[in-house]
Length: 189
Image (cartoon, rainbow, N blue to C red; front, side, top):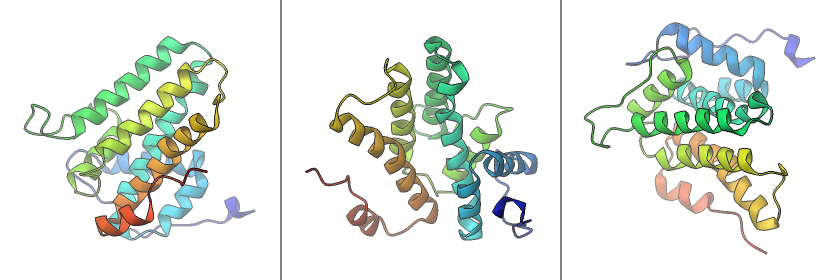
C-alpha cells in the first residue's frame, strides 16, 4: 500500500562531495529505496544535511549484510569481499600513514561513505563501521548460522544494530556526551 505512493525528496537533499557524483548519490538512494525501503523513508525525515551520510551508512550495511546471501555457503568469496570492505573502511580515514583518504573508483557506496567521513559526520565512526564488518564476518563463519548462546546473540545485536544506531546518531551529530549516556550497551541480566 505505502510503496505505491510517490514520495519525492526535496530537490537538493543529497549533497555532492569530493568523491561522490550525482549518479553515485542517486544509485545509493535507489538501492535503499529498493532493498531497505523503511530506512529510505526514515532518511527522508532526516535533516537535509544528514541525509546523504545516513543513506551512505545504510547502503554500506546492505553491502556487507547481503554478502552471506550472495555467496550461498561458499565462505571464501564472502571472506574476501568483507575483507575488501574492511580495507575500504580503513582507507577512508586519513592518518593511517596517509595524508588523505583513499577511495576505490567505481563504487558508489564507498564514494558516498568517503564523503560522509570527509564532511565530519562520520569522522569518529571508524570503530562502528569496522565493528559492523567484523560482525558480518563472524556471521559468515558461523557454521550453524545461529548464535550458540545468549552472550553471542547480545554481541551480534550490539555489533550490528547497535553500531547502526550509533552511526545514524553520528550522521545527526548530537552532543557526544548525550549520545554516550543514552546509547550504551544493553544491560545484562
